[in-house]
Image (cartoon, rainbow, N blue to C red; front, side, top):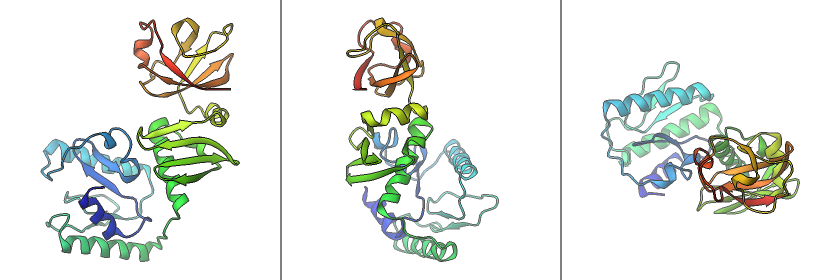
Length: 262
């Protein structure tokens, strides 16, 4: 974390709030997605000078976020004027810099007031991690259903995700993604979490994927993405894409590396 973000977190003093950063050129970045591409893989300083187009995009993204979630209060420490229908927006900057002593004090007081008014409680570590991983899963896969009934174990930066005592995934900070275990395959299949590759019914799958053994595949596959491998409409394993789906038809070599096999 940067020095400024440490100050913000210290001033907020509660994990019962949902932090959303305003940055350029991405717009809004929720704290729970800051390690995931693209937010975790660029380093552009924010000057606080916004173009008209950037301001319009940020305000549109704020409204979109509010439309999808049941927020009860907005504490605005961005320095950008926000006029949101149905919300009393608390401006903690009031023209000052984000790191000034008085603006951070106003931020702290605004959070304390909201905690008291809304009865916000501190979230436990495992609950906090699960909320974060569900948010990441929705961002990466458009669903978090595969995490139902799971528990978070281990220590940072490599958290272990278990279900009924069996490991189903690991969280890898360095690649900002999940590494699924064999035990995750039934749930990933049931909840249609990953893009699918269908093998030809007659072949015996022994190694990496290439066109000679593939019957069909999802054209929206991204490079480095985890894939669910099916044969006769049954899940037989997992693979990791070595090329985007639009390249597969013209690529004679390996298309995906075998990751797990049932």
